[in-house]
Length: 70
Image (cartoon, rainbow, N blue to C red; front, side, top):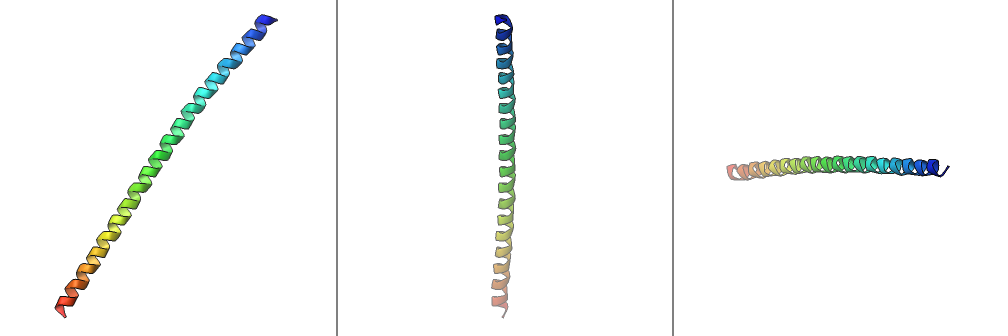
């Protein structure tokens, strides 16, 4: 009986270790996915800001040019 109990306890311990390792792998994957999404979002925002700034500079240039023509 003691041997069976020891074997069950050992199996339970091994299963817990496997489950913990699996959960850690999943957590690492989720964290990496979140990092990747954040970086992509930051790139998109920077591109949008660059486009807005470029558009603003073009408008100022046109306004400046119009002032000198008049």
